[in-house]
Length: 548
Image (tube, rainbow, N blue to C red):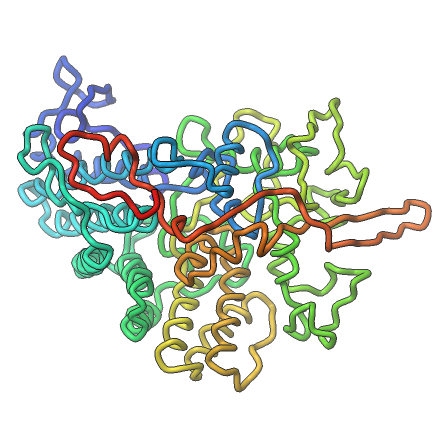
């Protein structure tokens, strides 16, 4: 659906927007569509629905800026730059903000703006003439999208006001108190059930990428996991698995490079293309090594690299029987390491990366535009999601890779976690995890793991399989491990220090040194503050989050 969404994402004015705009349609002289015009034409409603998709949040467009992934707030990556956006990202990692200047203040505003538009849509869609089955499906799509934005708000802020009607400035109930987190969870589950009832499990090629029944159930499962309702969440994930509509792709790398029309594994993605004027991204520019003209953002840490097991034995590198060779630290590791991270001497763009001290990828070179702030402080650059064939020096080049919001590997991991928590490590848990490991080229899990051992295995597998897809941050919050994982005192960021001797073509490695990168995480940081501008409004009924 990429062409449809982004070629036809026409902003229909008047009915759902407070500002005027111009379109290619034959409009009245004031270039606005009235409510009557919009809701009397199903083709216009379809185009407007497409525009809702165009506003799905993509990490390629950033939480703070297009430069930084959510992983840079975790122990998986760090922000090297001193730019304004990098300072904001560091500010989140260091918790240097309050309710007046929180980087998430704009998220609160944008999500509720979208929710109001969705409420207007849902209030009017039933009266649109045309195919009633299409109206029913479109209503379910927008219901999902509204709930998805509430889900995003709840993750960041905790309980939020649930508003399901389009408010006006003169409404007597314009200001609402916050719903409890339990009420929000129940609302999200109910909304996803309603959406799932009216959504198909698949689409034609022309509509590939639209929201499916599996997408609604996947978000429902996530919310059930947040509630700790393990048996119910396992059953929800199993329903998706039983549809057999989203098989894993043959290789890990292909998941992130295959177009939506043929990418069976990705259940829902924010779709991008390589057009500068549409919704292409500059993620390659931001994340590649400065040697290629990149900015070196989202630098993977040694902490993450050390978590990739040995391919042959499936054991951690800290196990003396794993087969790990400290003189050849990247040899025979989990193949997902090569698909995710650029390390010293690996081939990328037909050359060997030089991450050793004095190497081209980590040394200031003003002639090549390599400045100190672009150089990785960890000794690694990100490979995942970057298009090796793109010439990022061309200002018109954009990445066409999609941002996966939900994919089947996550569903399998969710099922394994929930089933293990509900009944223990039965054969179903092993099968779900081993499907993912087999695709990656890794051996099956060892038999007879205890429930606690399986919990550790699943958490490891989520870190590796879903690296840089935005899960580590939320998983740590869900498991209440963020204070330890995201604190410099408890878990300092480590780097690779490599010395290369050209005369003998030998390298020595030191993975014990740490990076000066202050991070903190206290109990209050599990949620962000409600924006001060909202709290200060006359008539506000909300109570601020604790300690903010």
